[in-house]
Amino acid sequence: MSNPSFEDLARTPDGWISVARRLHAAAHTLWQAADFERPPTRDPAYRPRAVPEAVKDGAFVAIGLAGLALENLAKALLICRDPSLVTNSHGLSKRLTKHTLLKLVTATSIQLYPEEEAFLFRAEGFVIWSSRYPVPRGPVPPPVEQTMGISDDFEVFDAIYNRLLSALRGA
Image (cartoon, rainbow, N blue to C red; front, side, top):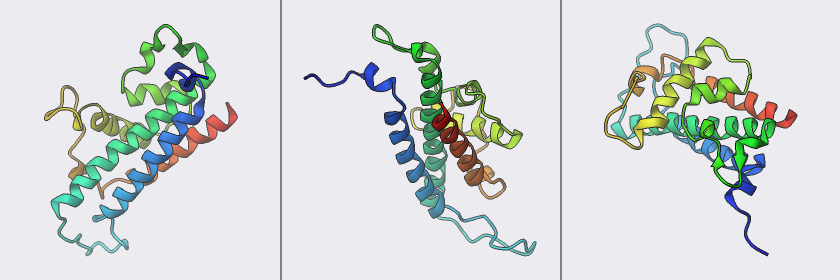
């Protein structure tokens, strides 16, 4: 018996979900290590401690991993709804070969709130260029240092992730 092809595996959500779970766990681990600016209280006098560069780097990578996790779940859901997005002759449809995270998640028709759309835009920037190029090749999200601690990206990521997983269970 031969090994299953990419196309055979790509048609089922299990592989996509498995990868997404690993990416989700890794993103959480890095985010927890980099959870440096979120105030423990609402005390306006609170000042964050100094942050080592390695911790900032971990936060940078966490956002990229979060984006990849969401990308995998979105692709799984889109394929579940339309198996013709995977063909034996061409593999994945061109619609699924880009890392346009906001478009992919929007195409799933899950509900998205403005702060979630903003997070997806930022995460897309990290997924598209941060691990592959020394500089961005298009619209750029604010540097990670400007987005961490002033937003709830950790919680926003989890909300989108769980909503996509829930939609997959119903697909």
